[in-house]
Length: 415
Image (cartoon, rainbow, N blue to C red):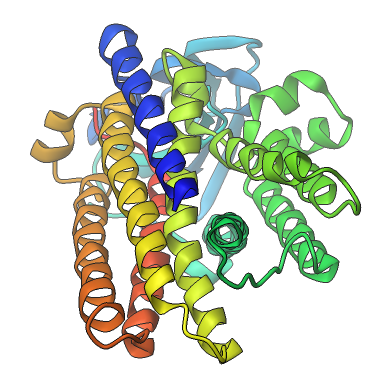
């Protein structure tokens, strides 16, 4: 029981520190966005423009900015890159003279945190020939969609297994049985590393050819422009170090910390005003989710082990305290992360995908809290058993919570 009390105390101190730091210093920040462009949206110009100009909310790396021009039949007629270099909030693309008609401008750029941002708009030369040009690809042909799927699978696996390790450590101190997966089973760790590698390769497929070329040439500036690559390298190395045999216990206890920091450093934090604050905040948020979901996996393992002696009451007491602390941390860090990335007012008042997912995470968290209360006070306390169907539903809700977080990390935040 002492380990649960110590965990709650440590979390309380960390939360107080983050709230004080965030309240004193941090202000809202967000993904780069397109603020203005020439020709303008739905503008009808009398003569074909010699250039297309995009103005962003923040300076972007001009090397990785690009424009595809489509005619009113949806056929690509030009692939444009800027002759400028360095970082600029205004990027100019020289274009050849085009025939009369309506054109779609599909643009993309890389924000300072390494996330690709993109969009499209229409303009017409001479006369408007159509109101809509479909330049979208089916989802299964979109590398960015597959990247999202693989990132969800990778992050879910890492969080669940790391959370299980932490719960095992807590249960070991409480005298309950433990069910080790990592670092004991190296084959599982290597499967995780393979999944991380595949996710990284698919992520590279979402980048421009020039960016991929510079990455393969080990250009340091390019690598620093895409922190997700650095984060995945750090994560893979950490898991390798996690599997080393006959190390001191403090070595293994330190590895989850580096895993959470690696996952937290995969993008958004580097666009914030205080990156270190944002990094630690997200790491603590991920650690809390891992602990909460890891407890579900532990209970599954406990049911399958068919222990001769019942530890249900011990599990109830320990998991109630640790999961209560995890829920409090998830809620508080979630609010602080929202304030750090944008503002609560913008999330609530603007109808965006990000806002919908934000409210969805709140609903999922409430559902998980209710399910956890039913498992703790009804099944484990009154019936002295673990309700397995309820546990399946808890895991499903937890995975949906991770999925919402992954999607939110890949889309723009409302300003």
